Length: 399
Image 1 (cartoon, one colour):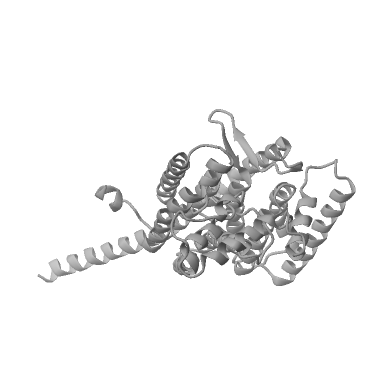
Image 2 (cartoon, one colour; image 1 turned 135 degrees about the vertical axis):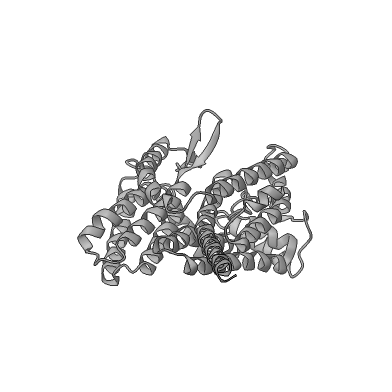
């Protein structure tokens, strides 16, 4: 164990925050999984507990393995993985699973082990790596709109277009993250404005085409529109069932909460262990527990900003922001849905929610962040050792 700890590199605060989130996730997952056991009659609470433990263990193995890879290799990896991601997204879209009559082809089932994998989450990480690479390589030259349209925005559009039909919230989150990243990376604002206008027009055309020809393409436009309408229409109680139950859970939690395992609304919320786990956390641990989770993610955001500023290269800084910010924004989107600020999006709470794909891709991103921070530490240690060797040589000569 001591040998393993000695080999752990990178920012210690990030390691601590992620480990804390993982530890905190066990009780809410164990409690919320009773919904699947006693209401849906699926599995056992101990089984879901152990499954979550295994998923987290594999996740930390991913973090450990990835953080040992020098981050400069992620630049080339983004280019090599890009066509693979395109193929995976196309296969996933064609697979076309159905949820209550609405297409939601987000999952690609791995036949050998029979496990579902949400390809859009991996696509998001690869996309951020690719955009970071482009911005870093063009930082010192004047970017032309035509060139960026071909080498930056066309690849971005390809990935987002393949995710959009089945997952609007992930598409919107990724597009927003790309906009933040290119803005911080120094992309010309006049070009960025044009891209936003083109994107808005393209999205409007897609929605109109999907409404006009609903059988020609798999999409969830009706589901998106109904969720937005239901969010603002407070009269239809059946349409807002999940959101209303989440609000009840949060309201009954009060300051100190009902106590671990004592949630009542977990028996009514269909996604109590994933999309609405924050509502269960607040119900059982109160406002104090909800704020504690929020501050952990704020601490993570603060820390990745510090690590990004300390990075030795532009690519390292952009890479940290590109893969780190989506984790925080996804977390606060999940919390906003639980308290009723946003319509239901289906975004899980990173690390705390159940689900292998979400946990593993979050861990992949964290491993990349730690890889960048560990390279900085190794460089500082090397410089310190060189300075000490120089002093020793001087002392020997003087002596």
